[in-house]
Image (cartoon, rainbow, N blue to C red; front, side, top):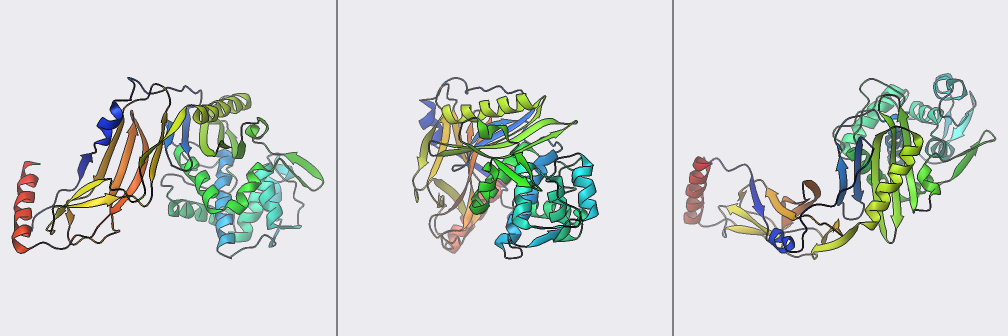
Length: 387
């Protein structure tokens, strides 16, 4: 049996097309955050990345994952907003008034509607609210944290690990800036009916009014989420979202030295992202992007397309050279059915991987005649030997 090549990378003509209008250097942005990641929500374009895959403790940013588990359970019909949860002594002592941490001041032994708990967690960053939910859904925080990590893997977060529902310090509890942004984008897309809570300015519980802790909401920049966090180990952090002029950006920053620096750095990067990029349409819906080589087929290649149009945001000034490559495992063994996923279109702006788009067969390719399959086998044998 002929051993097929594992990977083939094809460089598209798109590189040469865009090189003519490109500058010598990519547009630069400096931030005091140790880790940062920002994307355009609709196209998925990576606008900025700085140590985006470095692990750090999430602090209260873990509550984004807590809410995702809750929202998913409601969406599946396992919970309703009117369900009530009991305030245990553990929740009261660990996250309530005696804890001197962020709390909604839930009363020991009382029952609270899930919708009120959600508002307490999102608006007031309530640790007692998180623990009440965790115990009510999974019996204990440990069990709920396991659900959080399992659910993180299901939605594509490969590195994040959760040990509790609150984000309070715990060994092995880590996230990355990239995965926090992907989580925020996921919540926005999958649960639009609940996303509004992240821009709620205040919430009153137990006759105590508390304002939303997100500093971006009061800056008149179009911010509508999401969460702040702080630990002694990793400093001040934030996951923010801005919607303006028909666009939406998500950004995560960590490792800042003060709450003032956090507010300023997050405002700066989101404002820069809105002002400094323009949309470039690469391919229309249904347009052939490129071709993957086939093995044993009635023709030597199969045309590839995306599910829809492909667009990307590029820097307005000092644009670096865009490079687009089709990456697939191949050659692709015939027969190939139209619509089968074949590979990925990867686009770089300078050294930054800015976008990845799945590519599918734009046509069916049947099995070739015996002599064609024999020629393909000989070619692949020679190529494999040379490789």
